[in-house]
Length: 88
Image (cartoon, rainbow, N blue to C red; front, side, top):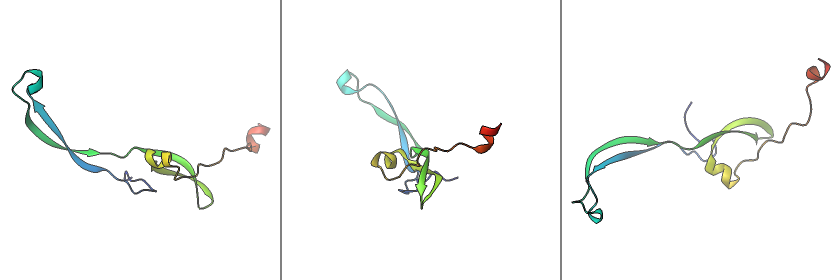
C-alpha cells in the first residue's frame, strides 16, 4: 500500500543525510567538513482514521496535518448495541 494521503496527496519526499566531522570554528576548532552524503526519504505522518466519506463510514489514511486543519469529518460514535451480544 502506498504511503499517500487520501485527501492532500502528500507522499514521501527525497532528501539526503549530510555527515559532518570536525569541531566548529566558534567552538575553537578549525571548522566542520562534510564527509558523506547519503540519500533518504521523508515519510508523511499518516494516520488511519474512521471518517464520513460520501455519507458512509470508512477508514482512510490521512496526514496528521490534514487532521489538524479539520479537512475530514470524523465518524460519529456508535450508540446501538449488537443484538447477538445482548442475547448471549
